[in-house]
Length: 71
Image: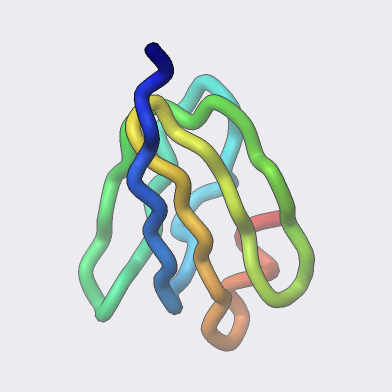
């Protein structure tokens, strides 16, 4: 049976580029958060990034210049 992943939606900043095979590091409410290993980036544009990790799906809405770091 396939495990349902928890979905998170935050406003924040991407600290390092989000890449499959690596952990993502995002800033949420001023605190750095390290995810489990990224499986795939589902969507990315100048407003947000959506990516799937081993355990969860994250939708991060960019604050200010955060889109620059995500590219």
